[in-house]
Image (cartoon, rainbow, N blue to C red; front, side, top):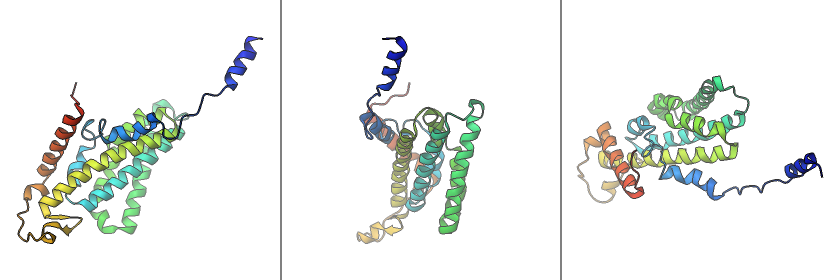
Length: 224
């Protein structure tokens, strides 16, 4: 049997397909939630974690926007990765992210103008969010579309749960409410002393610092 025939037979034997939710693929989603969190471990996306977390509602909208942009930019760049010239890859990535951010901004303007006025500037800054650009460069440029979607979901949810947690405590102790529902009044505490520090950026720094300390204590993560 010739070498050419052997090579054809070997190429005809396909490797077993990886399961849709194999152990490796599950880790793409679960790792950013805890052990490789983009905010508390990689220390990325800190600006929006401090700026938009005074109230839960704008924080939730910001979380949805970031998840949408990360997932779909990862998908698009992964689909185009083999035809993007290396010299202009950053420009292409920025163009894709800017298009998606503009789409989010226009949807907010059309359907929730009040929220657009609150988040307009910060939604625009998603274009320069280190988490988004980092996943495009580190993952989407070298992996298949499905894996890139999972990676985007993991990073987006990892970002989202941190800023939502920060917003929960800031609104609860700064305004005495959650999603504008007066928690302490509903519990019968009519004169709960709200903390003005929580509505300032220093309150976000404090809560974020506590989250980083708790999470790194649990995972044993140490800066090299």
